[in-house]
Length: 341
Image (cartoon, rainbow, N blue to C red; front, side, top):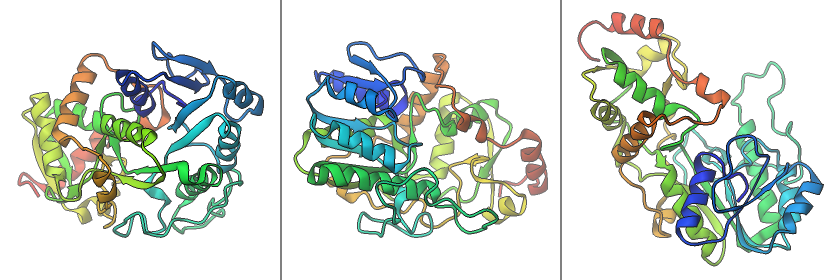
């Protein structure tokens, strides 16, 4: 297990322990304490000597890699090569951002992926200075990392492509922000259409599916999201009000009002994005392979329970990106008037 100290990585470790598996974790020892009951190896995956040292602890049936989100393809390639003689298969947690059509198009595993070699550095795919084109740098880098894993492990490589992952321990801050905003009550700016479908997946369900794939024969790529059309933005925000016991009033603002007001999509009002492909991800292959997605209301309730129990995520800069300034929110609400949009 690369990582293993926070959010998805930690949940993968805990699920593996529940199954009675022997677990080795590899991380720098900076993001949180090592889970109990594992063989903890500390090192930097960008350091070849540390990778060689890690390989000495094998062999293992599989590696689950959740810690490569900020690493260039070349580093993932070096790590895969270092572990290739000690690991039977490689489960790599990627992202739906690898698709060329994201977030404008409905997507399936057969959709074209952004081109990126397996041996490039962090600058590959970056926008030139002054460019105003779509920023696909993150997705391009992750596509290159996928190619790195495929190059080394071939038919024993499993690529998992989640969209938004929520649940207890979340470090990004999307669901926690909405929960705290619901708790505060009053008139709450709600984005877009309450009937808009959304597809967040619970961190615990991703962990179960990752380990199921680690134990299954063969490889492949899977989108990992909740089914299209099952959950809505309105249902999500209503669940936030319910679990917090809030008397807040949801005031729905049309997309264009929010855009005209300069509200940043995806961050100022988390999970709100107008691009038509964001919540149109076909995950039927993963569901056929055993992915089970619990109701979003359960994820909301369990995350609130975690927060109330003094749940503290690791210190991460993305947390501060989420949430609209109260003054800005109040101004938009005032312009909408007293009648919900």
